[in-house]
Structures are given as structure tokens and as C-alpha cells.
Image 1 (cartoon, rainbow, N blue to C red):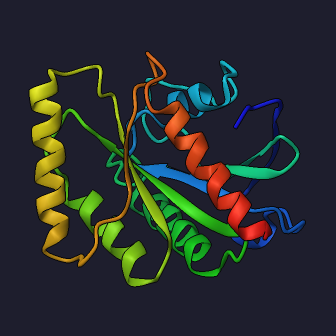
Image 2: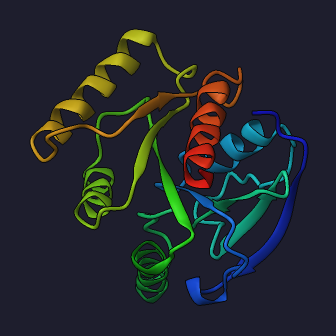
Length: 200
């Protein structure tokens, strides 16, 4: 797939306020500071499309980007950021949960996981939540260029082992680097394949 256009469309405080034109949606989510904005910019090829920040927890709304006038890339708030207030965390949690439970246009979710560190309980719990509710997902390992490959592959193996305790069949997994562009083709190819299948 070639990205010919990527345009910010709307920020919404609720799934009910999201676009209602029926275009398929691909949601991107992960722990705060996992590298989500950098990955979105790398994927679309447009630097600054998603705002990157050294301050975790900056994304606080459901952000829709229209890609090739055909499908939406959805940038969701990160989870697990401790420095927000309890009420804000609960608000984020409800907004995210309701989006995944009720958004009919959602066709796949990309859960971003930091490849530099061992599996985090909050990631495992969130992946489990999606699985239990039948939400299609792909695990995307970020920052694979930031650590020795032995460490990266060791952390991926640990995540697979942890998920194997709950899953009969593991979800698809893609390794990426926003710095080098590694994994971009694999992500876009998967999205194109899903788009083709739902249009038939």
C-alpha cells in the first residue's frame, strides 16, 4: 500500500462523536510513551502528523486521521500513565473501553509494546481485555533499534510465553522501528489485506 494522503479529521471525547461515514478504522494504542506518535508519523510518511512529546499522556482524545480517503487511522490515548489524576485515568479508561466495545467501524487494533523491556502486566491485561471481547488485534513491538537484538528477542519471547498461558492461538506480531522504518511495509500490507477482505 502507498500512502498518498493522510489528513487529520477530528478529535472526539467519545466513540459516539466519532465519524459516522462507515469507513474502516484501525486503532493504535499502547502504554504512555511507547512511541505511538512516532510510529504513526513513520507509517504515514508525514512528519508531525501525530504530535510527539517527551511528556507521556499527551493524547487525551480519540483522534481520527483519514488515509487515502479510504480508511481511518485512529490514535487513542495511552494507558497506564500514573501522573494524571485518578479521575482523569478513570475517564480515559471508560472512553477507551467503550470505544472498543461499541465502535462497529473498528476492524483491527494495533497494541504497541515497548520491545526494550520485559512484559508489563498492564499490557498483558489490556491484550487480554481485547481478546475476551473478541476485538481483532495485532501486537506491534516498538523501538526495536534501541536495544541489543538479544534483549529485544528475549523480551518478545517472554511476552509470547505469558500470552500462551491465556491464548490458544497468539495474535499476529510485527516488529518495528520508527527511526529506520522497519516494519512499515508489514503494517501497511496487513491493513491493505484487511481492507480488501472487508470490501469483497
